[in-house]
Amino acid sequence: MIRRYDSRIGRRRTWLHLWGTPVLSVMFGSILVPILPIVAQSPFMPPFGLMILIAWRVLRPEIWPLWIGFPLGLFDDVMSGQPIGSAPLIWTLILLALDIEGQRHFWRDYWHGWIIAALALAFAVIADWLIVHMAGQGGRINLVMPQLVLAIGLFPFVVRLCAVLDRWRLP
Image (cartoon, rainbow, N blue to C red; front, top):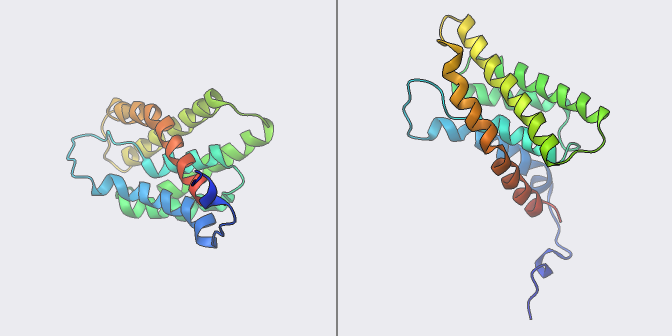
């Protein structure tokens, strides 16, 4: 009789499994929006790379060093076409805020994580709009509200996806 967890017992995971899975999943999230064949007048697709980064941070706060926001944000800027340097700044600020918040609260439940992620996503979407607006583009702020609502609404699904990846990557 084959049991469900027999394949997990004694398996060895490489460095790529343990540390590469979170990084590659964030990079895939950054690539996902530009490769989708969707044409829109205003942004409505959520920042999946940032959502996956925050989801991993909510699930496993110990895996991300504070400096990881810079290279992953730079990769996201290159993939998304945002002004270079905007995502590294915003993602690093979000990781710093999540680290400070994590030092204040040692417990976290489902709703607490979702509210923290909603605030971080709202900061990121509005800051992205502000950076583009200061560059002479962007339009009105209400154009990015569907993107923000969709990002907050899809966040539990992204956390569930990261939890499945986390179960796969750990021995």
